[in-house]
Length: 303
Image (tube, rainbow, N blue to C red):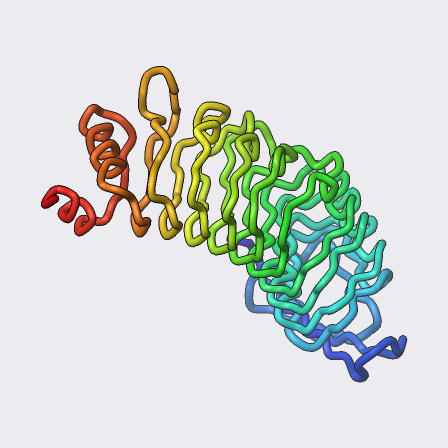
């Protein structure tokens, strides 16, 4: 919880590239009660302020509009943001940034270059294209949220010297497959990867190779075949594969496979009865917990 809340209200008097756009903002200080309204062309934030929230129309975020000495949280959400100029975040000292629920369609190269943030949300935009190097030299970044956009793939080229991401969310996009090494940019720490609610049909055997994953969610996709390498080449705690098109499941629970998965959520799939019995038997032998819907288990046992 932040020690203070800062509300900054930005109102653009004209919509477009006019340099006379007026920025009106309200500051709330650390006591959570004292406020001050200011107007100008630049948001100036010093050490007495920990959070800034933009509340009104801001189609463009251009270089020189921010002068932030120190800030925990910058929130620019649901303000019709469509364009960010390269360099807008240069030399800004911010820990957390949310640009969610706007109209960004493209993330340019180096837009966040060297930005010392630990959290970045771009959720709920219209992003369908990310240039190589868009997330460059972000040495402190731990959480990256790209959910609810229009991405069809994740490319290694997006990331350059950004080695410590632990939480990566690309749910509710338009991805159709997990390619070889798609997620090798992620940290070697304990990862959470959310790819649920896409259109993934294919998982490459090395799509998550050599990763240590606390939770991997692929629910609500179109997966039919689950490669056994998903379990033999990684360490996975919780695997969520519910609401896909899986009929058969690889034999991952034998000693030869040496899988580390502890829980598998695989309900709402057209599993054949042989697979259902195999999962039940594995769980009975102290294997991983397998979440199956009761009616499917009952139907198989009636046959």
